[in-house]
Amino acid sequence: MLVESLPPGPEQKQQNERMPGRVPWERYDGDDVEAVAALFLMRDNPHAIRRLPAQGDHGIDVLVRNDDATLTVYQVKRYTEALNSDHKRSITKSWSRLRDHVEARNVTLRNWWVVRPRDATDGDENWLEDLTAGSGVTARWLGRSNLDAWTTKYPEVVDYYLNGGRLEAEEYALRALKAARLLSDGTDSFLEQGDVEEGLAGLFRTVNARDPHFRYEYSVRAERHYPERKFEQVPVDLVWRASAVRDNVEVITEVYRRYDLAVEDSPLQLDVVPEPVTGDQRQALRDYEEFGLPLANMPAKVTGTISGLGPTGPTTISSLPDYEGEHSGVHELTVTVAGEEPLEARAEMSSRVFGPAGQGWSWTGTVGGTARFSAYGNADKTRHGVAVEPFSIEGMTPVDADAALALLRVSLSAGTVVLTVPDGPVMLDMRAEPDAEHPNDERLTALQKTIQVVRALRTLQRFIPYPLRVPPREQLTFPEIDAWVRASELMTKRYRAATWEPFRFTPTAAAPSFPAEFAVTSPLAVRIAQRTWEFGWVRQHGLAVSGDLLADGQILLHPGADNMLHQVITALPSDIAHAGRMFFRSV
Image (cartoon, rainbow, N blue to C red; front, side, top):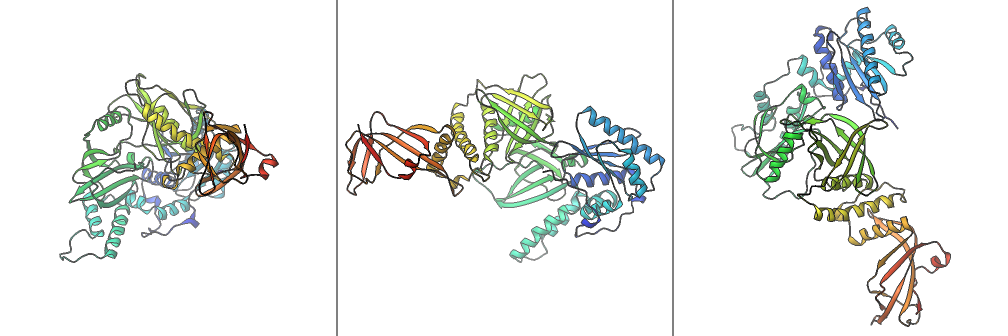
């Protein structure tokens, strides 16, 4: 099901601490009006792409990729007066240019919204309908009522661009400090918990009240004198993260872009100098410089100002300010490990970026919202491959977890990665080769065990009418995991053989003469996410060469040279009727 997000109408106005009055759009320069309207659209559609007007042609195109790979395009015009022949000629030109654009790229245009700071008349509606008749495209006007609603929703955009809201960084930081009650008031009184909470909330509100491009977040904790055990995934909208330590207190500052083109519209005034310490950090920096691959936890020296608090002291960064990471939408991902069947999943991809100092490129995406990977290469194709950041499969669907682990296998060994626009062309077809100088045999062996468990969950999902997720590690036991693997193999092949160890049972008849064949039928059941699922019955039989009578009346069976336990799915009434009973036949 496709769900379309419509622009706000007058009935959707939201309450805000600063409720601006009605904006007199006709008093402002046309370029400013178009810029503000386009930014409204970018805030409503953070992954949209903006196309600036051709020379001599007013208007801005904002392109939004829908879930079905079709496009919704907003054409922003500055016209505050009644529609006239010049306006119609310009809109007609924009429509023709847009039709040529989508036809040349073999994409489907679903919606075309014409945005201007004046509500449309019936005559305007009829004219636009005639212009787009027969195209199969839904066309609509978005007028002053919509812009007024956006003004209420995003007052900081109007303040920043139309009302002189570009405050100096030093003044902004001062207000933030006062809001947080971090500046001394001349007394030595202690702060109560409520004061601290109110101050932190005030800091967040003050710093984020006026900047339409970025969101600033701060957290404080005791300095960590040990490495973090769990890798924290870098959010795709994070512009940079700095960690500064002073007097054993660590202050983490994070800057997030509110929409993909925020860095382009308002570059952060920062000078970032990475200072790698380890060999891995030096290699990560080289990969960033050549291919534009993301950085994580890189020691750096950061100078400059931002709106709010600047980092001081030793600092680590998780990405660089000039890494924009625009969004290019959902792609179909196909991963093939050498000698195995292809695996398919959906990947959320950024736009391709280029290394600051080289001719290389990288294309970053996520699988399951958690596993972040990058395909990279250079112009002469001498270096290319797949890099996968550390991730956790906990909470992922078995399909996504399998694809993410396959990507990790490809990055460590060999295979192919293909990215395709849904129902569209292939955008990437890359083969990764193994690194002969740095084999990863031990990592691959450990990884294969995890893949076996995930694929068991994938198999069991076909028989469970409930969406499965990979459970947290603390909820798992080895017997449960082994049961998943056994059950998945039985449900797929209907038969499996495995070795068995001595085990006890309570006889219901006289002890058998050994050696003896034994057989027992039991439920085929597994426990996943604290729920038990049954799939039928399994009959097991093997050969015991001896049995010890124990003091409690049980018998301990021992295998011989033939220690195979044969398991087969059964639906025979005779097996099911005697489930749980052990039967013997002397041989």
